[in-house]
Length: 65
Image (cartoon, rainbow, N blue to C red):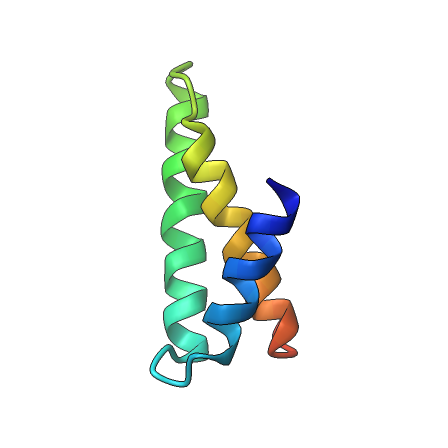
């Protein structure tokens, strides 16, 4: 799965149609939803965690932290 995350992150980082703001907004939305679910003691879907890792890695590849 780690290789899959890296591959998707690499593809997203290279896609110039996606702005740095788009990455930031997606990450913010995911973090907010994960925080909400955790606060309500709901299970956090693994796909949310996976996409958060992908977006963080894609931002990092672009040099955005």
